Length: 130
Image (cartoon, rainbow, N blue to C red):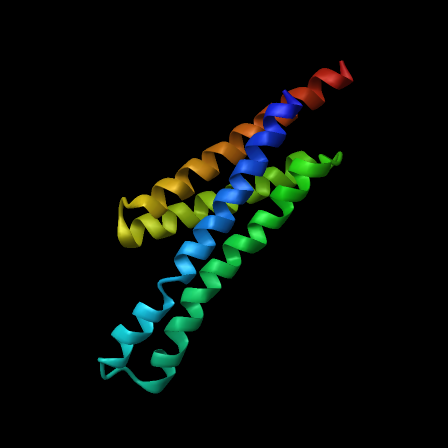
């Protein structure tokens, strides 16, 4: 089961990096849309930063997942659970704003995958101690 859990974590990490890259490609369109509005300067400069922050955030979450997939240290379960809850929160936030679209579907699948891998790793840890 550890091999399957590691594979799931690795795939989820790659999906998060891909999603971050795809999300970041929308920055030019966002900046163009903002330039045609009468937003205050603070917002006009802040919105693109927030846009890129979400992409950066997905990459930051993907790094420990990749580490877990490659090394699988003894602290894997709490870290995987934390990452899964963070991605689940991302999904819920994005879904509440934008509804269903490919990005929310990927976030939901990644959150489910991470949480499933966490359960598999926890089950293996329990089996090792009995």
